[in-house]
Amino acid sequence: NFRRWPDPLPPPSSSKPRMEYDDGTKARAPDGTALPLGPVLYALNKQIASTCASQNKYFMQCKTEDGNPKSCLRQGEDVKQCVEGVVKRADQQCPKLLTAFARCLDKNHVEFWECRPEQQALEACFPP
Image (cartoon, rainbow, N blue to C red; front, side):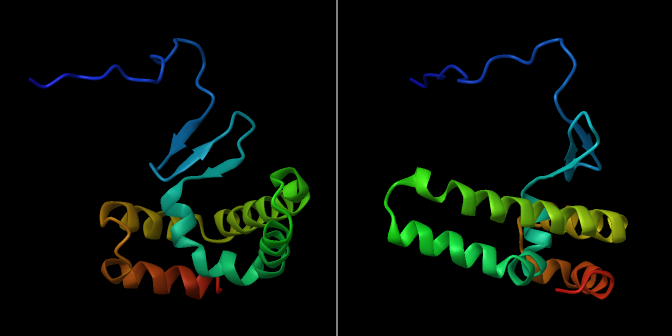
């Protein structure tokens, strides 16, 4: 007695897609801006953590001090802009290495030990 639940998402429209996928790991907005998917964020976790540490610290302090989510929108936007900057720089400096590492992580269910050669190559090109 298996009951299939309806899909909560509407079917894709025939209109122009909002994003185009590049190499299966990055989505591109219509203006060409890279929109990172999960594997890209995992691949750049060290670089994001080191570069965006102060923005993240202030955001977390705000969330701890104030229970109102609206109070921390500015700090959250600062974190978002920092992460987008890291992704953009990595995408400009080492696009093939970033894509290779992100693809490896995606293929191996984010098991970093399976992707050490790709990780080392990316970190040599774009250090944390």
